[in-house]
Length: 197
Image (cartoon, rainbow, N blue to C red; front, side, top):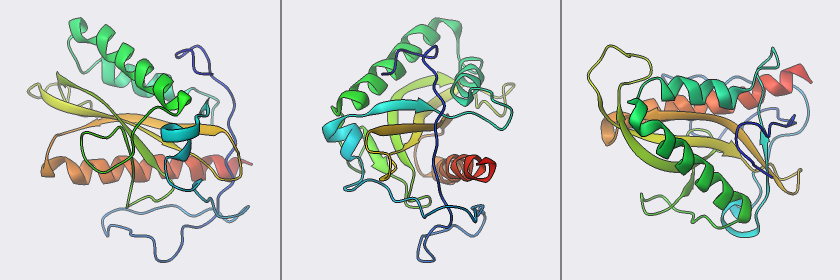
């Protein structure tokens, strides 16, 4: 059960190689892991977050740090203080909805969850937009940002929703490269975890 940042649990995910047919943008590199079986996303994609529900498991970095909290703090620092509470509440609400299986799956902004073509084991949960700076350029001009929670639903773990990261991107076509980079970073977090097993 997800009860906010305080409910953090250890997660496991065994992965090895993405299929050779998986799309890989030339400018991005997906790391490989030589252990375990290939990760297979529970089918159909989004089955847990959009139908049957699941339990959130929070990813940790190689030092045991809670990635979710690190990502959350990084994004909160890029937005006005007045927007933070409602933004965090929306993330919590959407994650609770996914936990109950109450999200919708599809490629448009009217849907909550979609599968990432550049990183097939990664799903994105769309969260409310906010007006703030790019977290990588806090001195830049504030503008609209789309928030994305990246996670996976590994087939071999029957009820798990594994949180891989939370990021923001520019809206429109300009944000697609940024979004692909974030999705591949989320995939790499799963591979990093595999390498530590």
